[in-house]
Every structure is written in structure tokens, then in C-alpha cells.
Image (cartoon, rainbow, N blue to C red; front, side):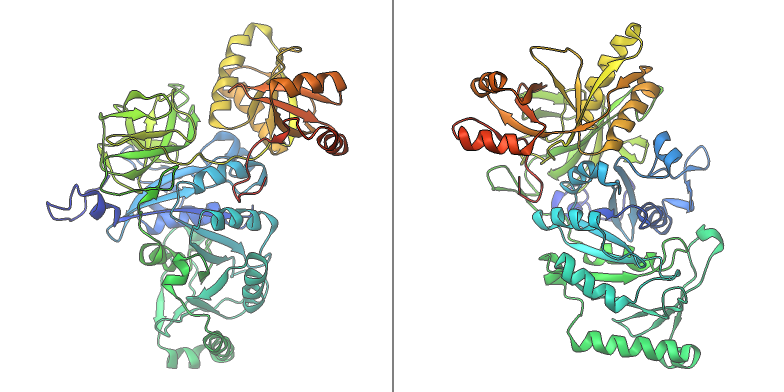
Length: 537
């Protein structure tokens, strides 16, 4: 981590250092431009010299927020990524998330580690189904949201109509900070409502370098842009009249969302957004533990695991646990307590992470994300701490909806198959269930179809174990106990499976049969498997 100018008393002070941290996630519907925006934020943050190339000692390399081979083949994000860089004296921890709904559970886990979120909307499509789901999680976690209207250089919808849609569908009142001059597809630039200045839109070759920003006084903009400027001023007056103005307090409370307009592909508006992250996004604060008591920033080190990833370095078959630091000062090599087991845990192999790349890190502070390499004993949601014991709330997950049976095609690769099965389950790629009384073949459980495709691909390419997978079928899962499971086996109509943690699940094909059994046998244990992050079951 780059050392920045701080006094000797503040250099290792967790509170002062937390004040320099901004940890935020980028969320969006697929194809809204999230990954492009991520890359351009790195460009403006100085982490890349040219879009697509990361600065490195060995020269240039691909800026891989989508670093997995399967992501690059399909052109979609399927796993979250941590990217750390410095900007304007702050340490930025950017958490890029998958956009596809089948991987939304990974996004929910990442949001547990974020202090703010940037919501990216395609100006032609507006609020889409996945956007609504993601915002529900932000609201449940009281995460402030910044909004970026993307692709304004292309034809799209009227911006005022988009503001209405955001407020009506999401329940978040947008407060535009920058406002477009010109219609979508005929983008002239934006007016900064704080200063009244016009920032003229300028294209760059393939968006590879930072876009020049020509600041024009309002009087000159009126002459140069004529009708487009007049229309923008009418709309700005309307925004003033209805009080749609930036209010930091209501933003932090999750009631309003500062809104910015631009084009990530051409880099325009990206700097405004990055400046807003520094100026508006909340710094890390005391995080409540499982009982609701806040863990003060100055307390001894504590953090929780929100992501586990295997094989980021295929040459070494490594295993990395991503930890959000919540309090205190982390020092590489320190011994901490693994709260789940009560055992000491060594942090000798700690790294800062930038996509699939990492460098040894010596210290970290609240808000930072550290990667603990070869931490095979850590699970998603685990707490690590020094000093007074603390356990942070568990990270919610989704109830699986699709189920399929997996078998190794080549029985001589069974050992590789079992190892890959265990590691990918630990990552949360799928859940793995077993029939305690029948077919020994594992049953994979997932939220979406594409999770099975990723699972199969990674088993083959990372563990050299090709699998046969039955057609995934929808089922309704309910958690049960041994006594109820025995009764269910006698009446039929469901299948009893066991999770790796020992919990028994009853899988029903028919919701009507489940409803009837619940009505006829109210004393039977048939509970929702997992809790939705918004708090519903």
C-alpha cells in the first residue's frame, strides 16, 4: 500500500487511517456498463496508464476485473473482484460484482463488506429487475447509493423520466449533481449544478485515456450550445423547484441518491463520479457485532471473511480468503483468533489484491480488504479478531432453487473430483448435498442455471475432472430434523438430503404437497432453508 503524507501520530492510528478509506461496490443489471466503468475508475485513479493495461513492474498486463478465463470467453462477470488503489490521498477499495442474476448471491456477500454502492443504469433501459433486487439488499444493509446514468452518448430515454422511474420503482429519490446538456445520443456535456459550469463532452480514441474536460462558463455555453443549453437550464430550474438537490445527510441515511451522468465507454463523467466517492461516500465506522454492539475503530484488530476464492494462481492451486478489516491495525504475521473454532490463526501470508494480482501487504486498516493466502480453514462469514472476543453477523444467503446430480465421468479422477467439489462448495459456487440413505452421488444446489455451467467448467479446467450433470430441476427446499425426516420418508413426495454442515433438507416437487403437509402436520419442522438478505424468507 502506498504511504501517504500523514503525521507520525496518525500514520498507524486506525481512526485517522479509516478516515482515508472509501470502500464501495459497483452494482448493476447485466450490460449496463459496470465492468467498463470499473476499468475507467482505475484509469482515473492512476491504477492503469491506459484502459486495459495495469501498471506493473513487468510491463503492461490486462486490467482483469473479469480475470477468470470463462469470464473473458463469455464477456460477463461471474465472480466478484477486489481492486485497491489510491486517489486524492484516499485508499479506494473498489469491489466489482457480477451483474448476472445467477451470481447475485456473490454480489450480496460483497455488499456485506461495502460502506457504499454505485448503481449503474443504462440510460436506454433504466431500472431493470436485477437492479431492484440489488437495491433491496442495499436498503436492508442501509448502504448509501450513488447513481450513474451511463451510455448517455447513445440514444436513450429522457433523463427526467428516468428520475421518476428511480423514485417510483426503487423508492430512492435521485438528486442530480451533474445534468446532461443535449439529448441521449446527441450528448454535449453536463452542467455541474454546484458551480453552474458547463463541462463539454469530448471523445477519446477508444476511451483508452482520460477524457479532456473543457470547463465553459454558463454565458459562453448559452452561446455555443443554444437550444440544448436552454433546455438543460429549464430542466435544472425544475429540479431546483422540487428540491432535488444534493443533501449529504439524507444520502447517508439511504433516502436520496446523488446522481451523475456520463459515458463510461468514452470516459466522460467518470472523474465526477470518482470525486463523489471521495467527497460523499462514508468512511468506515464502528461495525456492530452479532449482538448489535459496535466494535470501535480503535479496538484491537477484527474483520470478517466475505469471500473465498480458490485457484486465483493456477500454478500454485492457492486458496484466498478475503477479509474486510473492521477495527484496529492489521499487521502481517500477527496471530489472531478464529472465532468459529477459538483457535489461533497465523496471518503470515497476507496480500493486497488487485483483480487476480496480489502483492504482499504489511499493514491494513478499517475499510481495507486483505487476502489471506492458503487460508483453507476459513469459511464465508467467519470472524477473526485480537483482544476482546467479537463475532460479526453471519452473511445471509439465498435458498437454492435448482438441483442436479453430479458424477465424475472418469472414475480414475474421483480424487480430483472430490477435492474440486469441496473447494468450490467452500467458495459458495454451489451448495453440495448428499443422500444419507441412498445414491452416494452429490446433489448440487444453486440459485441459477449458470452456476452449474461455471461449476462444470472449473472442475474440468482447474481440477482436471470432467463431470456428468443431470438436467437441473426446480425444487422447494425446507430445513427439517431427524424425526420429521422419518415421517416424510413414510409419506413420500419429497427427497431428504443432508448438507455438509449436517443440516437435513427436504426437497419438494410440488408446492401444494408441501402446503398440505404443513397444514396437516403443523408440528413437523419444515422451515425455510435460508434467509433472503432483505430479511424475507
